Image: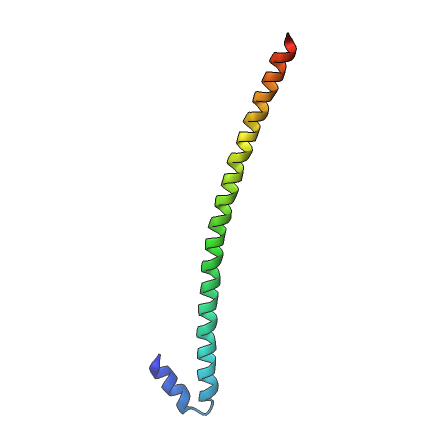
Length: 76
């Protein structure tokens, strides 16, 4: 990396080459950070969705129990 920067400085367009390398490095770092952040967020979303699914299952069980109670009460 140091040799590449030294070579870029020695050429006519060395300054632009160095700036390009720095900009490319920053861009790659930013993209990696965004991907990491998105993966963490996705894991949290999946956790929330799983908890909501469990809650919906419980509501379905409660609904069935209430229906059975009503049938039992009104049968008499």
